Amino acid sequence: MDQAARLRELARHAPGRTRTIAVASGKGGVGKTNMSLALALCARREFGRVLLWDADFGLANCDILLDVAPERTIADVLRGRVPLEEAIVGGPGGIDVLPAGSGVREAVEPNAAQRARLREVFERLRSGYEVVVIDGAAGIGENVITLALWADAVLLVTTPEVPAVADAYATLKVLCQAGRNAGIHLLVNMARDAAEADRVAARVSAVATRFLGMHLPIAGWVPLDAHVTQAVRARVPFSIAAPACPAAAAIGAVWARIGPAAPVAAGGGA
Ligand SMILES: Nc1ncnc2c1ncn2[C@@H]1O[C@H](COP(=O)(O)OP(=O)(O)O)[C@@H](O)[C@H]1O
Ligand SMILES: [Mg+2]
Image (tube, rainbow, N blue to C red; front, side, top):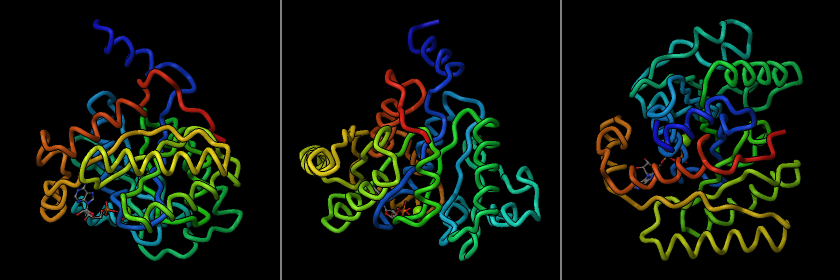
């Protein structure tokens, strides 16, 4: 067994390793769904049981992206109408997908009972899968923050655009106020080049340190890559349609930094 394989084997059994990753952003359209899907596919290369959880209850999109029209969704599960297992569908590349229903009000603003059921679902998924990637809604809705507090690690996605950066910072602040100030990693998506990504990352992490007293590790950056747009149009994950494209290579590096085999375990899961 080579060293990488040994590390992966260790990660598989070590408690406290990252198994649930919540992908968050301030602004919509920054690439959360595409990055979540690509991360789940990276995870699947190392682990047998990987789930992509579309937790964008207000505006579900995994089903659009994946070209599956789910009959049952997490909304039915949270309403107690359908067992969790029946809502999970097979996705591309051997991953499982838990679809969200769009415009489900009680899932967007859950009451105490629904929140408790959400926790139950979270725990069952966490123990049933080796890696769960949670594709959350944009912004600071209650569910987004809740899932980000529960997850082992948070991947905060922004683009270099000023409004996206400002909203990423606002999300960071809310997470911090809610009690999460560790295990959050920044991903700069759709950057033109490394210099632009570095500038954005440096700015956000400096603000985080200065105003929130928070260390914000950089998960990496993903270039603006036409393969992503083409893949979305073809409804195929970009890392499957073009496995050697720049965005796929970049997300592989991100996975190596934040996945369960990363040398430093993420902390802060509440
Ligand atoms: N790295 C990238 N390069 C080029 N286009 C991208 C990239 N990431 C995302 N996109 C484009 O941005 C759009 C929004 O991405 P999506 O993953 O749906 O964002 P979100 O889930 O944050 O709303 C996609 O349709 C895709 O065309
Ligand atoms: Mg999305």
